[in-house]
Length: 244
Image (cartoon, rainbow, N blue to C red; front, top):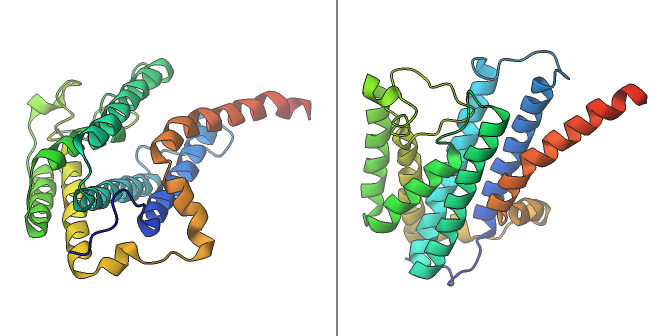
């Protein structure tokens, strides 16, 4: 395996993560405009135009998580660095739950994308598999979630597993199954690429895409502030527009 230097950033991977963040921002801004009735009414919960976008955005995010873990393992990231980042991520997940409970008390986020990332990272940190093993685990997790469901998993406190019989009422639901499968597949793909096609992840990034890479290096911070900023902008517009 051609190993990236310890703690070096891979611009191509950061840019891919940055792309997911830009797409997420456009999606959430549209959602906020819809919430404040500033665009023709949209159904973000059922309209395929929006639900498929959400599916693609979350898939891209969690694939990047898996790819990043392949790089971290290749670099030999020490435990203290991992846990420092993990606790920061877990704290942000709790803040998302608390903030969503204030805005959406009947559909607050009990297990969203940050919760899924935090739990998935524990799995990939303590389980060691070859690239094909992670790919098989990813396919198994996705297949299990698509073919198995039971009412016991339909409660607020168990739907994080993912084997629900119907989609829960929540603003964001990214359960362990099938999404651990996406992280696992990304990890397996990352291991394979670093071994057989290292240039795919470690190659140079065109100058025009460097802003995406810089954005991708601050993904957690950006994730936490982008919605408050967007909602603030929308509120400012609704307040100022009648006076213009």
